Length: 115
Image 1 (cartoon, helix red, strand yellow):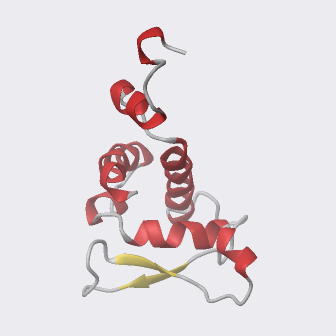
Image 2 (cartoon, rainbow, N blue to C red):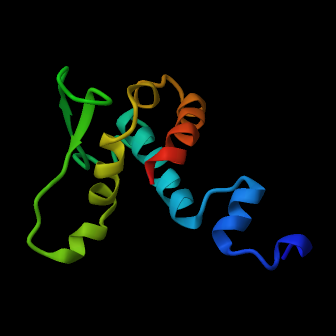
């Protein structure tokens, strides 16, 4: 514990230190893994994990992911379902990044407003 921040609430400590919450850090890791998958890093392991829908009319980015419909609530916690809603809300600049490093930088900027 940092001495001068021990009396503050969790959110206030994170803001003072310039850090994201655990929820945002988990989401960031999920979105990075989704980016790597969509760019072809995990071609064998996750064959057919996401369904990409391309549209010029889409608000935000043009490469939306389609969310599957499930009857069981347990599937809402699956990686492919967890990531879709947040991926579709990312700006076009982040999704169209050519490298992982550029995506991470743009994702940090987008995450400050995302969750």
